Amino acid sequence: MSELPNGLHEFLGRAGWGNAQVAPIPGDASFRRYFRVERDGRSAMLMYTPPPEEDPRPFLSVARYLNDHDMRAPEIFAADEQQGWVLLEDFGEHRMREWLDDYPGHEEATYQAAIDALIELHLKPAGDFPPYDMATYHREARLFVEWYCPRMGLSVDVDEWTAAWNEVLDPLLVRQQHGVTVLRDYHAENIMLPAPSSITSGEQGLIDFQDALVGHRAYDLVSLLQDARRDVDPGLERRMLDYYAQKAGAGSEFEADYARLGAQRNAKIVGIFTRLFKRDGKPRYLDLIPRVWNLMERDLAHPALAPLADWFAANVPQEIRSNGGAPAK
Image (cartoon, rainbow, N blue to C red; front, side, top):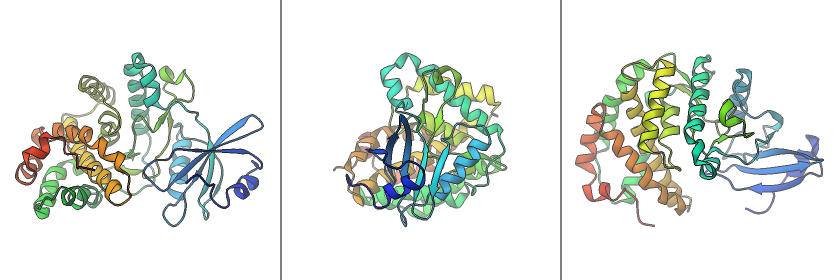
């Protein structure tokens, strides 16, 4: 992956960035690749979304929506949708995660700023994106029984898995009608701090939002506070959940819906991380499963999750659950 993709310099030339210096940046779990390009004292980010595996159009659509509604998405300088190239604003190297590793004293204020940005987003009219409907929730949750359970040698009742999710999610779907834009991966590695003043001003850059849907306003809050890649102290999670509920005027069922979506998201992530290991040869994601599993167990303890908790009790041995759920490499 160290070689530069074909067509990179040609695209930069067309975009007015010919002869720029190009430095690869470590990527994520997808096929996308990222590069920092520098020329004449300026820098920009180059995203490569190679077809047919990737398509830049959803990213461009969500970026335009966010910028049109005064949210802090990167400005798009140039794009070649057919070849998968996007040149965009460089938010720098300060991700929320690394900033908090270096300056843990800013944790409370930084999370509050991230929640303030969510509240602002939820006040905007929802984007013209697909709905986060029951079929989508099921498709994501099914990754757990399709990838994790076979890896652990578990023979589970898939029909009851589906029935449990129907019972758990039916009340939530009523409350997410006329929903909000859900970025779906809103966490400390996808929130950028373009300047130190971002900590207090709330000017937090948004990235990795190409999978946006219209759904429930608790989903991105779960993504932020039940972070698969960073430990969030339960006390901080509690304070931030209360902070959102108070400022956004969340109703009495909001916390139950937060637990519902936490369990759904965490079950999906366990399945995805197992798939990344088994199918894509990326074992490092297995090390993240115990954190996600423990978060899922906390969600399952909520009374609204009783049908799903019963399924886990009947289908996943306690030995696996007590071990943090991690498959062997």
